[in-house]
Image 1 (cartoon, rainbow, N blue to C red):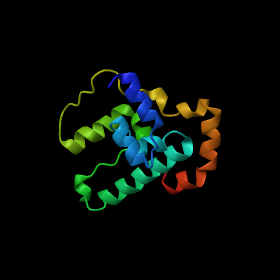
Image 2: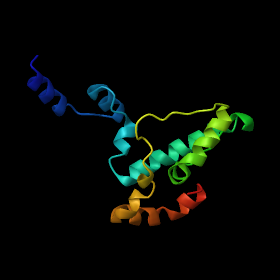
Image 3: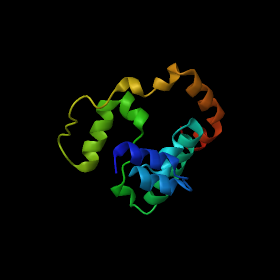
Amino acid sequence: MPVASSLFEITNKVIESTDNLSNIFGGISSASLRCRNLEGAFSLWEEYLLEGRKNIQSVKSDNLLKLKFEKLLDNTDSEIEKIKTFLNIESLSIGGNYIKEDRGNAYLENKDLLIFKEKKAEKLRKYGF
């Protein structure tokens, strides 16, 4: 079947659930679809955060290193030292320029994100942000 015809058939199918959408487009998950707007993205972040916190409860404290992204950006060298100490290694190479210190507060330049942050302030405080 020609590609154009296949695409036409796909776009005309009635999609009953996000699972069907995932199957049709080969990997688009319902989680990805939730990120189409800030509310959805926040709810997914919140779900991941809570699931992560639940999962680490069973980890012994000496086998766990908690890091905050913002601290890694603000104090890269000292946070890298913490990672090295925790892993008991002498060096840690981060290839390329993957840590971009200016990204930590990039949202401050976006009016919509600032408004959204205020709207979610209580939950953010609850989670330690």
